[in-house]
Length: 315
Ligand SMILES: NC(=O)c1ccc[n+]([C@@H]2O[C@H](COP(=O)([O-])OP(=O)(O)OC[C@H]3O[C@@H](n4cnc5c(N)ncnc54)[C@H](OP(=O)(O)O)[C@@H]3O)[C@@H](O)[C@H]2O)c1
Image 1: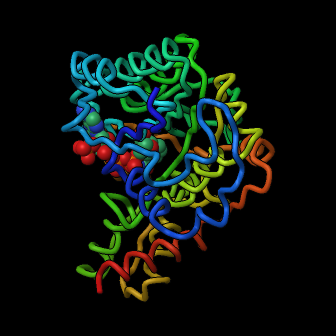
Image 2: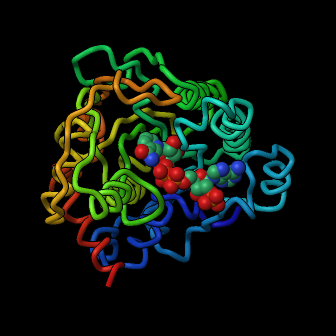
């Protein structure tokens, strides 16, 4: 067995954030525990991860997946790759099913046969968003759109496969990498005097760096390593606090000193291909109690960090 942890989705926001942390000094002071399990803390070093992009492993092609795993062996798998374009998913159902459901099922099957843990990222969009209480991991999934439905099927396939590892549901990811709401707002805000943003959809933003740190922390603690190596658990993770897209946009402009007026829009006045949940706040009690010493951040503070990183990239 290779000592490497495979990371699928090298160029995703999460993939790039994880690579950034592994190259930084953050991890060296935090990752100290050693273990003899299949995934071990001593592996939290850039050299022990193998990041692959679509050209090396194409999740839309089941033969490509089979061939890849026939020729490569790992001590664990992290899957960040997905079809993530929520509106486009509505008219690309077959492809989205393949990437978000069947490919996950196939990878989970390989993880089960090879007896290696799989960490897979899912979404708050598996929930309907009609309740006004934070969703627990055990709450019923009832997605409103194709993206959410295929991610839910991916989760279920993982559970049915009998593989071990973790499903981590997250929400409203943003980062200095790739495409996301923060980058879109900055671009629009710099070119417009005013902008309408939806006020009646509420959730929790998540700085991708913070989720990548959570995963590294999981790979660094005896207790969580043992869990990953023995059972499949579902967790929720986002930054702390709750806001609407409108609040989020206003804060982006405030912190970036962009003079663009934000006007509140109701969902009914902002037509989009995919329906979206109204209230998708997730309880993080489980992940907080499962990872001793887990440090979380309020979304506003995390947004400041993201904007600082974006500024560094601009200069
Ligand atoms: N973005 C959000 O707001 C959000 C919210 C909740 C949950 N999530 C989940 O979090 C995870 C990471 O999201 P993200 O925003 O970091 O992703 P992202 O930046 O949108 O990137 C998606 C990744 O999926 C890969 N991919 C797409 N089709 C593929 C294929 N056929 N074969 C192999 N790879 C393929 C892409 O690879 P290439 O770059 O090589 O094309 C890319 O690396 C996903 O599981 C997503 O469902 C995201």
